Image 1 (cartoon, one colour):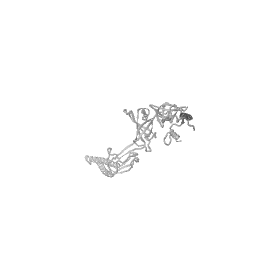
Image 2: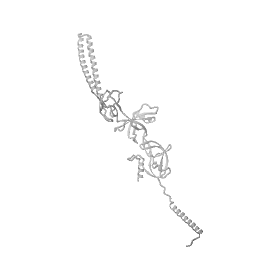
Image 3: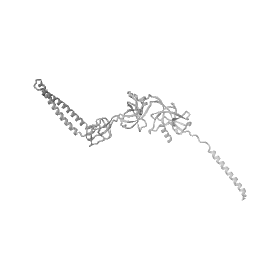
Image 4: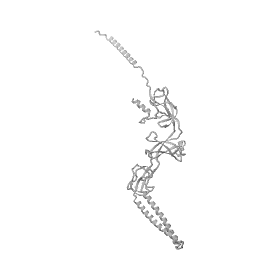
Length: 402
């Protein structure tokens, strides 16, 4: 084995190192070149709907409260002890149903006493009338003094007056006896019994109410309308014209009931610039109760054509409203629009769009103006699935699950 000198060994090692480094560089370059082809461009998918055009009627929305058509504070008209309460708290009652019974015995005894006084007055009247008639026959023959005749005539008239007083007293006693049964003055829903069996009640308007009673159907919704709404729509109601209204409750997204304007106040409140309005709605199922918050929508314009879009498709850019429009080449464009009121689930567009335009209704966050997209045509969200999700959302959920 030949051993090279030290200097030559160092040269050989250095040459070998250069060869290895060069080989590694070449191998690395080959690997980079092998992975260099660019990935394909991903085109975002969006749901696109065509602007809806249809004939609508303009509505104005207000907030108000439900009120009963008839509300009664039930009070006793005679004093006495309550011996019976004939209803369950919160029950529906009919007009004439007995609600409370006050001890009738003192009033029955008063009726008996008044009947006796009437009988005595009738007997006295019969006697004095006969005596006067006899005096009339005698006076023609001068068989009786004029003074005696006048006394008999006066006695007959006095007895007749006492008879009328006795009749009135008996009628009063019978009325008071009837008041011992406190009946429902109207049909409706009764509140709880504020005074129960065994308590003594007083009578009159200043006495404590025994309970309260409100009518059920129809029911009023009262709200304050602005001056422009009155001038455009509501003053027709003062002349007997019918103005349609719709009602929605706090837990409803839409308007579930239809009604009419019942009355408009006789003056405008100058401090608030509003006028008090009352609308009437049927309430056969009894769901509506006085005091509930109500959303009231007043309609009155003549039907006119309008463009409608899904409200969820409308974006906000500072003080501007916009939508993303998809052209025939499936490119996205920014479009500023002016919007109006809601019509059901759709928003009225006053300007910026035309019939036939396609707008992005789902997937707005995935695209920007100028992007090319793959458009899936869907209807505007006038229809809903069983879970009340808009159709576009339902499609997106299905695509995601698939």
